[in-house]
Length: 291
Image 1 (cartoon, rainbow, N blue to C red):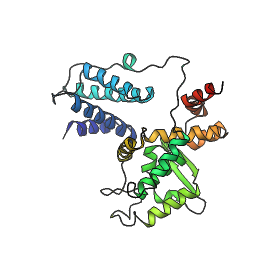
Image 2 (image 1 turned 45 degrees about the vertical axis):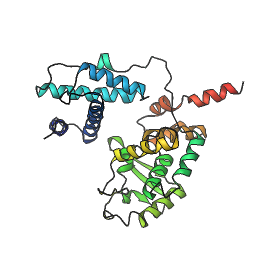
Image 3 (image 1 turned 90 degrees about the vertical axis):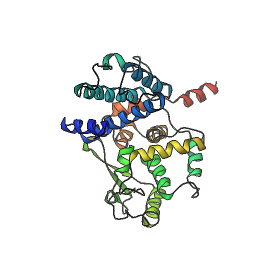
Image 4 (image 1 turned 30 degrees about the vertical axis):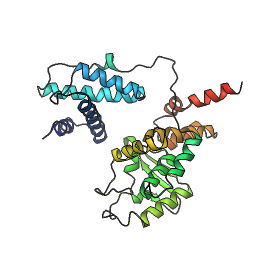
């Protein structure tokens, strides 16, 4: 059994939730990929130097403090696992010292796609030589429902009510929310189900989005594809960026905070306010140019 599998099994035995285990394992795999690129010694599992360099890399790549702190926490748990197994002797990570701190009163700068970038992306996914119908549907679902990537890949066909044009999402903590689907999104779902999906060997899968090798698409496959087309489009894409865009655009159009919070599946209105009530850098720049 390889180390990641052993770590995963340990988390299961510790009684961690399935989504927590997926998060921890994914973060550890990302750290290992970083090590493979940077370190010649493939026996190095974890060190203070490697951790500090990885955290610095995340900062330089523009990851949000909350995302970095989640990854730091995952590596702290991994460190505990390695110590328990006798593979390392030290605790290299201390959350109190190593988490990224945002100064009190600092604004959370929301990164959202501009109208121009959205239009460029929509034109790009129209090209069937470059983009499959399934991947086009992924863009439309992320852009016009604001679902998390985990929620996206877990959508089942039974969750879609074509009569009322609604989508039922099971979010964090098992919370259920209902989303209205635009007419163009409904049409795309129908086209995909009757076309590319019907040709798949996994067409009997209960999940809406299937891959060539699996009856359920993996969230990493969504991330990887968006990262790949980013180079061609000239701006970075990742699943959560669509969620930011969805919420930001609703607020700009005058939708009240409570409704946006419910659509996003946030735990509270305060959470929505914390992330989205602040204006984006582009908004501030445009405001100053009006002077």
